[in-house]
Image (cartoon, rainbow, N blue to C red; front, top):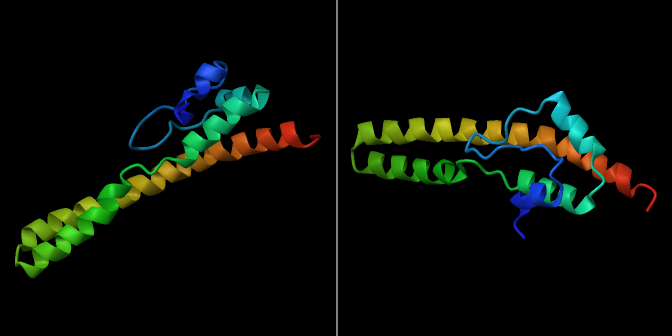
Length: 118
């Protein structure tokens, strides 16, 4: 079962969205829905899904290499474009992880509450 199928296990969990920019911004009702869940499997799947957000990490790794090669070959304009892509991709990854960490905090808290007496 894929981790993004947490809502198939517990449909009361909020939809975190699917985007290269990361999960949607968490709202108070989203947090309350997570805190009301009692399904550890669904919460675990949700946590795994949130931890898997890498957004455009490939562009972060790929674009500096292309920029370096372009500079070596004397293609300054190409290098500048790929350095700009690097900056944008880096920001996107950081934003995706920031949003995911907010969701992760609530999910982790709920899992801890449910397993405290176990």
